[in-house]
Length: 196
Image (cartoon, rainbow, N blue to C red; front, side, top):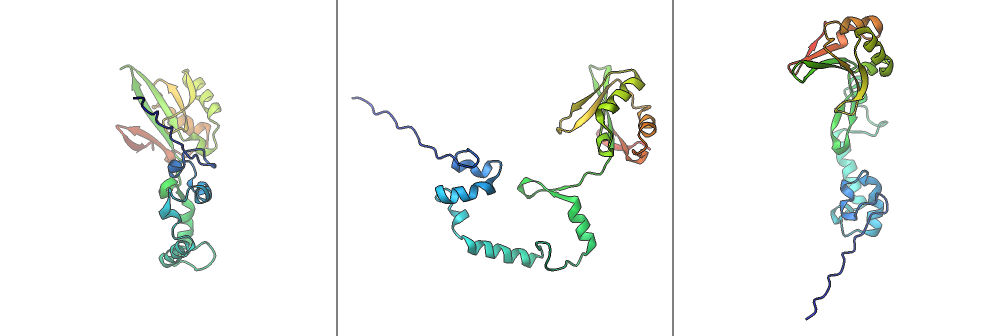
């Protein structure tokens, strides 16, 4: 009574992204994988390749009906206003729309260990300020440690030891005249408050 050993499962890996073919849609660039999948694994995504060019033509007609053009053809009723809004809007993966960031400096005081605090300065780079130079100037002015670190959103920010929020707005506007006082905000109790 010998039991048979199970055969190992043979997995088809995508030649473009290297993921198993059934996971390509979750990979970094599914559009580049589609031609390879059409040739090597058409049974995995039958709804994707079933209609072929007819579906493409239907989609193009639907888009034209909605009023989205590829740039040259029909003029939209909005004119220049819609063109400027399209420049501000940025598409993210999944079709989500991200608006262009307004240049602003955000100052936040983070309390740690009950008495110690850190002042975080975000957004100086949007005004053309080099963060390493800014951290050195802040450290010298307020006689504290200051460093450039990556924040939770993967953007660089300046961490300054101590509570320097009382004098930092005046220092920023004096040192870098390109940064207007109207563009500086404090975060207090989770709300963004203008510094002016």
